[in-house]
Each structure stands twice: as structure tokens, then as C-alpha cells.
Length: 156
Image (cartoon, rainbow, N blue to C red; front, side, top):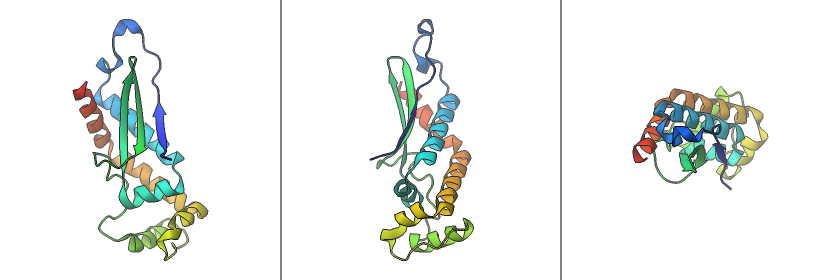
């Protein structure tokens, strides 16, 4: 199952018109960044591993009955956020994971890649290190979230 993080803004007053007319790319980008932080907090070990090794985050912005919902999901479509969170993409995972394990003061990963998800699940240092890394990635890439918002606003 895919992990989603969605939120609904406070109810709007109908006499102001559709919500998207008042949203700026900064507002919507900030909402998406908050949803990404929520996604990282709730991600399973399998989802964390997937994002660290191959990225794949996707923004979700939908308008329903004048309400705008934002979210982040783990998707397969390449997009502005899809490479966010990949650790050292120029090295193979078998070399990358032992290095980050040292940085995160975690146990070394098993040699068998089929056990990496269990390694993340069992080692709290790995999970917390991965979450900190992804939160930092989000904080450093706010313009990407704003670009997603800007693209959606242009479509509307």
C-alpha cells in the first residue's frame, strides 16, 4: 500500500470565490513541503528504503468543491520531486548504505539486499538517520515544491 499524507485547509468563505484564486505558489509549495515532512514521519521501512535508493516522491494537489487538498505519495511517474531523497546516486547501494550507516551511527547493512528493509525496520539509528536526511532534503529543496505548485496553478 502506498503511504499518503494529505491535509485539508480550513473551510473557506464562499463569498471569496474558489480557493485556488487566493493561493500563491509559496503558500501551496509550503503546504506540499509540510505534507512531505508528514510523509517522511509516517513512511514504512520499505518506503524509506525505496526513496533513499531511487526517489519517487510525487506531489498531489486536487481541488474538490472549492477546497484544495495537498499531499505526497510514492509514485512511479518522473517529476520535479522524483529524484528528491536519493542518497549518493553516483554510487551503487551496496557502497552507499555502509557509508550512511557509519554517519548515522547504525549497524552495517547486510550484504544481501533482500534484508535491507528488515535492517531499516530493526535499527532505530538507520530509521532516524534516514528521516533526518529526508527532512533536510525537503528543507533544502523548497523551490521544487513551489515549482510543483506553480505548475498546478497554471493549469487552473
